[in-house]
Image 1 (tube, helix red, strand yellow):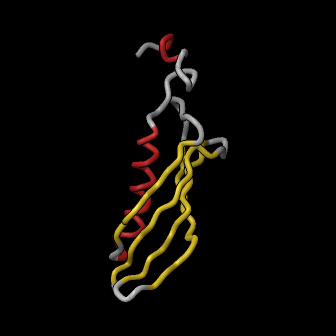
Image 2 (cartoon, one colour):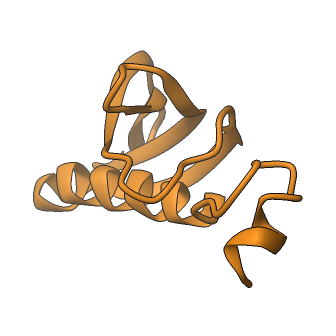
Length: 100
């Protein structure tokens, strides 16, 4: 796609595909969970703002709740991706299982 055609798009130019945010959030979760023997079970995301070439992004997660079942321990995590201007570009929720 040329820059002139991209300028007609909803993003107003060339933008990064939202699945790249999804992949970055997934990688962040697995890098945290797998060494502890946990399993990344679910991820739901919402794209808030398009990313342009040259943007820098940082994923974060905050544990929202914990639940213990007979066979596992579960954590629900609020996830977010922010750009270099501290603007939210993606938000969502993830679930991680820590088997007993």
